[in-house]
Every structure is written in C-alpha cells, then in structure tokens.
Amino acid sequence: ALADEAGGVAFARAEAHAHALREMQMASALRHALERQELRLVYQPQVSLSSGAIVGLEALARWHSPQWGEVPPTEFIGVAERSGLIGALGQWVLDTACRQWVTWRAAGLQAPRVAVNVSPHQLRRGDLALAVQRVLLDTGMDPRGLGIELTESAVMDDPARAGQALSELRALGVEVALDDFGTGYSSLACLRSLPIDVVKLDRSFVSDLDSAPESMALTRAILTMAHGLGMQVLAEGVENEEQLNLLRSKGCDLIQGYWFSPPVAAEALAERLATGWRL
Ligand code: C2E
Ligand code: CA
Ligand code: CA
Ligand code: CA
Image (tube, rainbow, N blue to C red; front, side, top):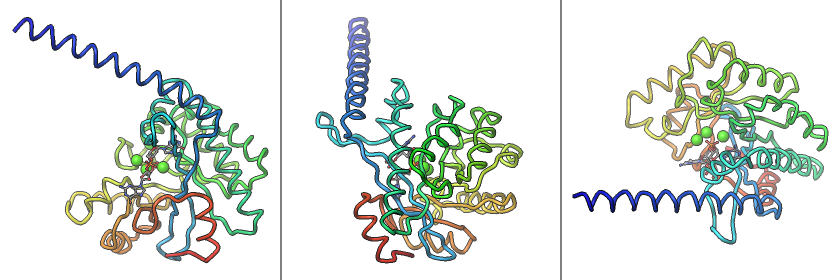
C-alpha cells in the first residue's frame, strides 16, 4: 500500500509537471501568435426579436496555432490571463474589431454595433475606458458602433470599480452588456446601481428552458427585473425554434445563438449583411 501511495504521488507530480510545461509552452506560442498575426476574430449576430434586425455582432477570438492546432478561446484566454499576455491580447481584440467596423462602414455596409469581450484583468487595471477612448480616436470609430461585454462575475468582483468603468464607457457613448448573467451572484441592489444597457442571459438557462421549470422561472424573473431597471435582455445560446418561441413569448428582447447563426468570418459576414440578412 505504501509503495502504491508513493507511486501515486510520483504520478501526480509528473502530471503537474507536464501541465506546467504545457502552460509555459502555450504562453510562449501565444506570445508569438500575437506578433505573427495568427489570431483572428469571428463575429456572431445578435438579433432583435421585435424588429428582426441584426443589431449587434459579438467579436470572438480564434487561434489556429501551427503547433497546437485550433485552441479554444476558453483555453487561450486563460493562458493569457495567467501569463500576463491578456493586456496585449485584449488590446489586439479591441483594435481589430474597431478597425473591422470602420472598414465595413467605409465600404458602405450598414454594419451593426460590434460587441467586444473584456477580461476581468482589463477591468481591474482601472484604465479600460481610457484604452477604449484611445482606440476610438485611433480608428475614427463612432462610439455608438461599439459595445463592451463584461461578465457578471468580473463586475461583482469589485462592483464599485466596475461601476466607475461602466459609467465612463457609457459617457463615451459605448453600449455596456453584462455577460453570462445568472451564473454569478449579483444582488439586485447592486445591479440597480450599475449603468448597464443589456443583460445577457447565460446559455445554461436557455438550454434547459423547455425541460427545467426552475430555468423558466428564473428567466421570467430576470426579464421582469431587467425591464424594470430599463435594461434589455439578450438570450445567449439559442439553438432551436422552441427556445426562440418561448423567449419571444416571455418578452425577451434579443437573441444570439447557432439557430440564427454561428460566429462567422469577417468576409463571409460582410457578404451576408449586404444581402439584407435578418430574422
Ligand atoms: P462568451 O462571451 O459567453 O461567448 C459565447 C460563446 O458561446 C462563444 O464561444 C460562442 O461561439 C458560443 N455560442 C454561440 N452560440 C451558441 C449556441 O447556440 N450554442 C452553444 N453551445 N454555444 C454557442 P467561444 O467563441 O468558444 O468563446 C468562449 C468564451 O471565450 C467566450 O464566452 C468568452 O468568455 C471567451 N472569449 C472569446 N473571445 C474572447 C475575447 O476576444 N476576449 C475575451 N476576454 N474573452 C473571449
Ligand atoms: Ca460574451
Ligand atoms: Ca456569454
Ligand atoms: Ca459563457
């Protein structure tokens, strides 16, 4: 038994070592990827249920590494957060999304607002609004063309600081959305005091809307609360027509998900937008 235990410990050690090594190698590959333009953005439409128009495009980062293949964003964003690369990565995303929007508009395309995900780290730095303002100036982008998505948990980590950053962003004319809503632990009092335009109902609620009565009850409550506070609700991860109809009947404002469209590359998106793509 003793020998077994020692073997187990050695195995766990080897595993931890392999994990740390992979993390280091991936951080180094990601650093190069940022320099070599291996990253790109894809865009997923956000649709209004009342007008059927595409009112937003969420920018989502993709990394195809020659060494690691297609790395999921949840993985490389985590690596970036832990290795100090998230500042540079976040800046690249913001800059690229704004340039893309300006390019679309210059080409005469009625491109809707682009929504950019911001990591907790970018929020903690305290200069988020300043960084956004710089990008707007650098790219000549209309602030109304930009949205910022911050997760509920990042905001609730330090609501006072987040509130300050959100107010500054809003003062610039940028739309603010609270991402993954329902998975964190917001108090209603807290939400009331935050300047938020859109609450993004987390995919986990949407996925079991039809099967779990609790999810339906929570969705109803979130809709009532958000509307009472003058906020819109966007349901994420809408994959089928039943979910769409349920959400519509409950007064949900916006949807996003595979049912309408997966995230698409910029060129393909421009072609579809030009044809008057809508719900
Ligand atoms: P998120 O912000 O919640 O983004 C939505 C995720 O749901 C995306 O995954 C999207 O592709 C996926 N999705 C959209 N519709 C559906 C659907 O109908 N069904 C299902 N099952 N999934 C759907 P993705 O692109 O893999 O991104 C995962 C997460 O990685 C994002 O979650 C976000 O937290 C993070 N992320 C992605 N790009 C960026 C970025 O540029 N910056 C930061 N800070 N985080 C990012
Ligand atoms: Ca998001
Ligand atoms: Ca989300
Ligand atoms: Ca999510």
